[in-house]
Image 1: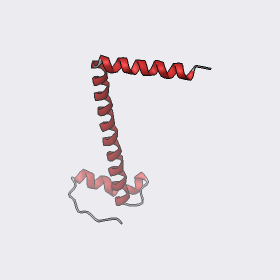
Image 2: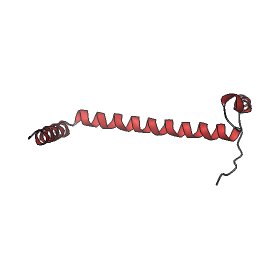
Image 3: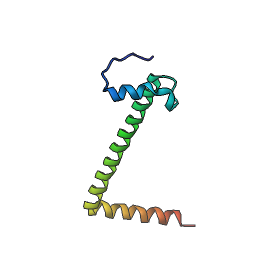
Image 4: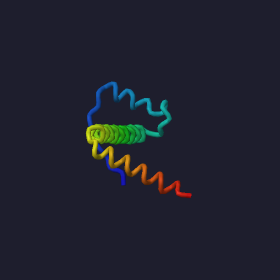
Length: 83
């Protein structure tokens, strides 16, 4: 169920909202919801990117983990090529 929210905008933001039809939106609310959804997705993507970078850094510094990964890859490859 949608809720209403009250917030303050800068004049240029308000001007942009007034042009919602020009951008193909049916209402100002639809434009704002779409913007929030896109921002949410961008933030999640950035969070995943940073997490992947951290895991890559940890992996690069952990030779034991690299050896285990290599061993697992070799075992998986040899199991799949037994035929």
